[in-house]
Length: 394
Image 1 (tube, helix red, strand yellow):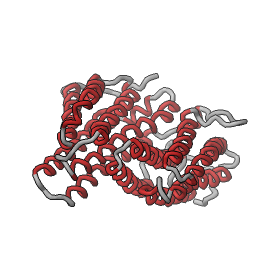
Image 2: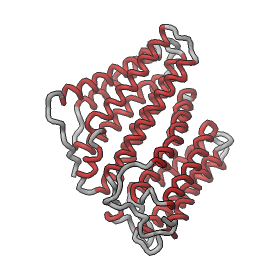
Image 3: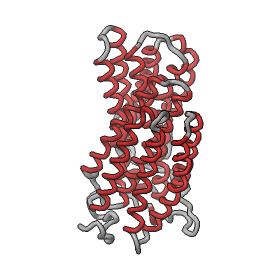
């Protein structure tokens, strides 16, 4: 198939809905990225460190999300789409390599890689789609990434970490906000409903795969950190707590809502709603998992050591953010939120003040018990009953 074969560029609704091998290969970059981000947070559990980690995660996540939409809207078997995916993969790997020093000497490299990814995709797609309705979609998206490029590059030149964080925060607000508003563009307006023609099975599988990648980061942290320590009682206990926590995060995500995500997308009355909400819902869950992975490194290195407030917020904040994102995810799939989610959030919040008195492994164990209670509640609610079918909100 020629690169310029425009007629078949968009995905065939009747064609294959499976994720391509290139997409799976592309995801390997994010194994590296998430490990570096969680490692950064584990060693910089301050307000500034948390903000830096969040901004870096949001930048990496947005590149992945837009690429997931690209391969969902267009045929990933087309040579042109493969070339774009490979180019984005190269840029993403460069971004990942700069993560440890993105708020240091390599900030401009990180920003240029991010901007370059979105510019190259737009400059390739816009002429390639000439004469098609999809070209206007590509123009809208390119317009907004061109606007956000200004604070991205300015932030890269800024020497002060706080100023850089502020400028990159502004850039991300433009990127995320424009997407949620449907990319309103002068002369073209917003994206019409007909441009949200997602493939349910493919898009759902992509989100499920990224959750597994995030959980894999936690497993990687557990194995690598534990291998470098003494296998004493405290660290062995931390090892068990960390693994159990990872297992529970997987169980809570996958129980019904995660399993029936493709059906939920197909059941949505207006596909545009899911298209706009899904990236933010999964970002919250991914961020919660990454923070939890950072907590694994903390408890495995010094399980019985002194606790500070930064540690407390990492140890409890990760599970809490995951539960918050999972609650929203459940609402998007079933149109309701289980009481166990609300109870878990209240318990984690109530526990926070007293946790400063406990060693890190005890705090992590308390969070794990809360997650276990939620998982048990999920199992008890569905035991012996007909599996619940998706019922997304209107």
